Picture 1: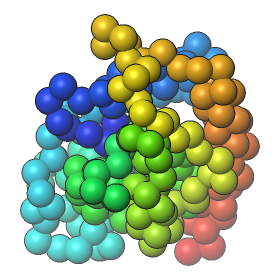
Picture 2: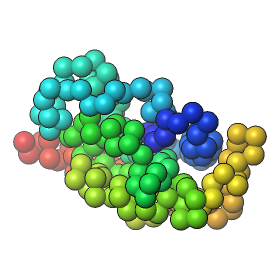
Picture 3: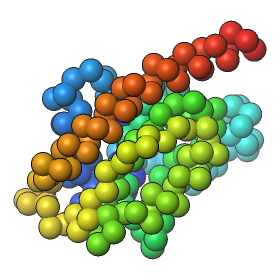
Length: 188
């Protein structure tokens, strides 16, 4: 699942996420569910029970739960906002709990000079608390707007190589973690 973690009108992140999606598709080996949080349009968390219970009363939560449950790995494409990650991504994460557990996640961050490094640093403990296994490699894109031309992100060779490395890591982690999830279910 590729998730674009920005909902701002005119967002540069959409071009980055579309490039990621196209690159992953061209490489092959993954069935991709592309999630644009602007289109998903989740309200602020509005469930009566805590996500840990898995008891959802809202149709949008049940639908989101099913999509996340069906994913074996995630790529989050997220901006850095005020030295953190985007609030819409936090909201999407907070709706669920066990659906994220023991699944790998790769991070593609973008921003100004630091390329979203502070956002990634803020995101990592949240991902850990949800039981997501963060890939050791990530792609951060500095001064992202300088690489967008007519709405298209134009990656450098180094960025393509880093994304390929991240995809290789997710490809290795996904089956191993699926096996762990399945063995946990059998033991329960």
